Length: 284
Image (cartoon, rainbow, N blue to C red; front, side):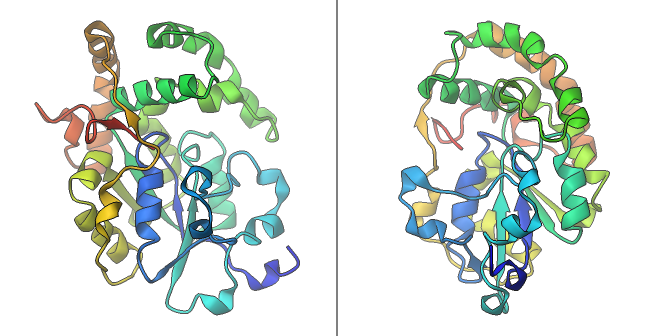
């Protein structure tokens, strides 16, 4: 923190989505010679203790700008290079976009989105694996979601220091309603500062996806090692009940249509026969 005045903030933010592949994308970008890690280097940490961000614009905003900038490499090291950080909760948090606009108005914004049905189921199963979800079926968690989230969005806005576990970690269905969350960010940043990827496209061709991101960040494309195709935070897939899938598909249909209109492009999970798991795994 003492050297924070010599440390500029992020060139890019990776704002989500949770269980959508953001961790995999971040560490793929770190393979680029012109992308620097956070300080201390995430490359020095074991894979089960990695970090891609500090949750500043969602959970730790009260720590202040000096604390935030202390996580970035010194400005003197950054000639011709870029550095960024990410939190999968930034997209969904009701104050993150406003805070980012106020503090880093020129930042470039990356977003990885995944089939919202698969994302929701993966999110639930992650909570169960970590013994952080007491309800033993996905269907029970979906049924409880509205009650769990009641009033939490408004309370976060009214009490900016308030941290809501339910809003961040038990919003299985709500976090996949991508369009209104992305629109909130677009209310604060111009469209040219966004680059939105589909997780399905990223895993199908990581090199092409990372080349596009590099160009967006003003960098030259660079070859990736074969290991990049391996998802981070992966876990064995599991069968989602057909009835639950149909119910979620109906729920998400208007949100998917709104998102496609917002992005002016078709999404992989709305193409017949292409929706479903990414590489047969759950991922982060």
